[in-house]
Amino acid sequence: KRNQGEFEESLLKKSLDAPSEERNESTLQKIIRALRFSFVELLDDLAPWLVIGLISAGVISALIPDNFFSGFLGSGIWPMLLMLIVGIPLYVCAEGSTPIAATLILKGLSPGAAFVFLLAGPATNISSLIVLSKYFSKKVLALYLITIAAMALILGGLLNAAYSSLGLNVSATMGSAAQIIPTWIKVGATLILLVMVHHSLSKTNEYGKFWQWTKDRLGWSGARIVK
Image (cartoon, rainbow, N blue to C red; front, side, top):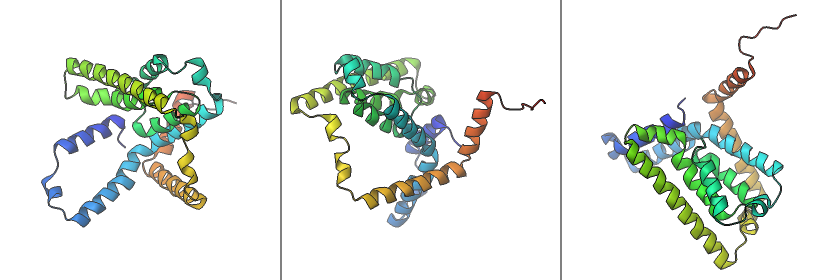
């Protein structure tokens, strides 16, 4: 099982070195390969992060009161700076950070601050920087971090300005599109996703790895019961 850094490095290598036989595939073969990559290979790598993101979003939703961030931080530059500081070292990929950002918005975080978190987190996490350090110098990495941080803050501020000028309430608009979809489709799609994620976690032995990680942290590994 590849970790997040190895996964990102493999994607970078594939984008730089596309095998010549892939260019000669038929349209049907390309569609089949794309579907297999999306629903099998990619899901195997992203399933743990998706679960982490959904669980984290659930914990935030249960523990943090409504409008907590709007009352505590407001909607100016400070929440964006906080999300930038939190997002840069956070080891969560884009799939894991999306449900977290959505929950933070529902708890009163400004859309611009959530946007900063979504931009800075996946692009500047530790695994990404380790992969990039193999190809670029420290000066280029520093310039990369500064550029990501500056653009995230600028775009986050523009997004807040757009919401303010249009008079939109993001907490009222989020989730409204779900009312269009029939309940049986939502429930069915959720069950299918759960089955696919469970299959990926079982196939890659993520359950066993998590149990072993838990035993190591609790000091259970190699422990014997003394009567």
